[in-house]
Length: 248
Length: 306
Image (tube, rainbow over all chains, first blue to last red; front, side, top):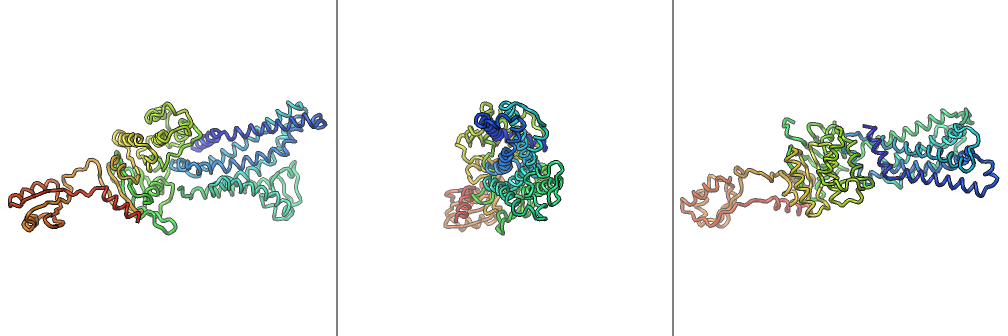
């Protein structure tokens, strides 16, 4: 049953074309960046290859895709409430928890797919403009992926906000607020001992790359554990709320 | 649940929201092969009841059984027998009609074949438009697609909340014929809610009337055997004293001027007239006073507006 529910969610997302348009948007954006560097930044363009281009993209693209993740996380639930189709899902045999989780998994799937598109298309665009060059693609993929866990956390927050508020605007707003608040949090409380238990500290895992440990003794695995626990907390909250919700 | 013919049974169902009783101790049951009307003025609790039947909202008290399965305890099993349209047919407008049907077929407890989908598309006469997006559909077409999605998994009960809302007269006529056909040919129990009496009268076999969330009455509309049902009969005579004497054995309701009102079965009417005539009571007119559903419903609705 879960697989069929997932297929449904995937079909609906693709029918709305939001994934398609967003992927086209990031491809065009990356192409534009490549073109500008090629034409106007002479010095950089000569030293650049597909690997360095990708590492340049990793400065900004994950941020944009994170926003997309927040939007689809919120939208996949709130759209059904907006259109009244939520009733259609819940008057059928599938349990509420599995309906909700199929949506969650589909949203994460769409988010990760966009990441893949960004890496593949970014590399291809870099290769076309600047040549392939030499480097390790694995290293590039790993470093570009350090933001993924926190992005999934934010997607989960906006998803849960969608279940609680059923309002698209509010849910996206909450996701974005948490994102802005997390950078403030890092500046204000990042050195305090207790901050290591707060997910907001781990917007990127880059500081813990290659076995690095920060001043609070946090390593990659500790950071990842905190993020996963926080994701689980919001996912469970959303299920609990959804199960008891009266559908009017 | 001794009666195998009963598909849906509500037992003393109540719903309280924020201290306010929306539904109060409501009980009724629906049988296979009948179109059952659920009639009440706006705000009387029809939609709330239907939502409880489908498990969309919880009940405060009571039980609802569908094919013997409690909606409270075995919701998944219970609703697998149900096809429904709650308020408007809610569909995914950005997808084609066909994709909508695929979507709902995947959610069925029992597998729905491609052939079944084709069959149902033909049944609701949407073959030409099925591969167009639903946003291009007229309201009538959406309504038909709504019925198609509700019938895909061959449910034993179809629940429709205000199904004729927004339909033109031709559409209403079509829907009515279709629902009657479903009930009689496929032996499906059909529950239709409405605030319009005329609609219910034309469509339904039986009707339950509710007001302010409370049971008011249940009536049989179609195929009623009137022979043994007592009705008030007004008889205008010249000598009401004698008439009263003669009618003593019967159930006299009222005597006003020269009109005697007696509660009689249909078969008793000729006997009574013969008896009066035998004793030379002159009879000017005999009229059965049927309290119509309409009178009752109108007085109800007025009561609701006050």
